[in-house]
Length: 580
Image (cartoon, rainbow, N blue to C red):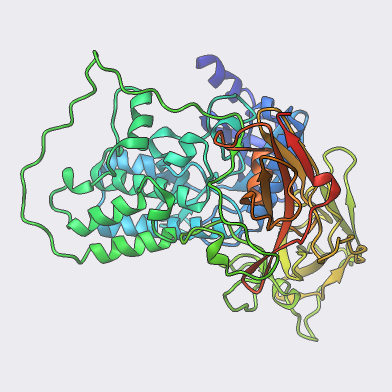
């Protein structure tokens, strides 16, 4: 450990990607965080440097930049803003706002535990931020005290609560598909959900489980399952009863127990529909009747040495498909029949909330996917900033990310806001910059280059949007839905295929006797999967309950007016046999 700390401190004084590293802030298993100065802008930032082993993996670099771009587009007052991300000299780095404060772990060490009102004041903004992260298609995967930052009193934004370090440095969402070490999962065991530990399907409800464990820690001063061995902690998350704070805090209303137990339910379907709904239940519990004092129970005895706890389940090497669902027809069907009743990863389509005018300095909790007139600032006729010219978008030759560049319209130091046109016809905020280029890593290498718009802002003056030339429309098979292509499988049942542009969901269809002919084949078994899930994991594995050999096909799906539309057929390259 001293050698690692010495190596981390050795970066102080060096310049990395235009940042002068000033001091070491913290160090963990997924990187080192420094206080640094952006030399060109003269701005103090927090610079996270990731392990070289991750930078050496081209697939991880692509996923890291894609998720960093998504995270940078989040405009939420309780999400630490990301300024830049990339790789240079064999190092992956992430530049974000420097928060002058302390993390929640330090607060709990000093104060011991919080009351319900104090808990809701801290975790309420965290819940809102997590819901925004989930709406953007990310999963945090590591909700814990160290990732909740509180600005010191007396500083700018004093009392502000920030959520940091979400998703972009955690590898895959499945236990066995982490690119750094097979058989391990990324996260903190004391706050990890059962599905994350087992390598099952992970969505925003997994973060809600971690938030419930964090709430328990804040109320009681202890983690939910204090055990002497890590294997015992893992087993408790899988099999023990949900934690109840009143066992250590008899003064708490029983409604607090009910809220925490529901958010920490073993099955995701039994939890609240969102993290904010969980916090609303805690706020309501604060005014519930307090039970009569009862004696404090004896501490739970540790596992006897003669009877060790059962070993945790085997962690798979790739993400298994979720439980099979009935096959949909190729026509509209209500979305509720294809996804759990609780919060799930977002689907494509316009946001339900009404759009409104957004300025570059105004944080919003809604997803940054808007019409062009809302995603950019519409200038008044007499308030024009020097707009950009010659806006273009090109793929890189190395990592295949898209670089959007333009020519400045004048010598002034203006701020540029860049948006991307989605396949659904909405404008998504890519980020802001004062340079004349920005890298968008959120578009997969096999997708066509989308259309971008760039707006300049100088004080209160804003230019009109300047757009890149639109690309040609992709070819679509009969039915008007781009097809999944190039399905390949290993003998163990791990699937890999290419997502077409504009498609966020697909149907995996399996038959035992022959190749499926259509997606609604009555003799087949089917699973619905999402693009975000696949891109994060890099592979999908057939459940062990599917006997091999078997025949597999994949059809594209699309959300239309809230219903799921499945392509009527398969691309010829999207059918294969597994384990023959």
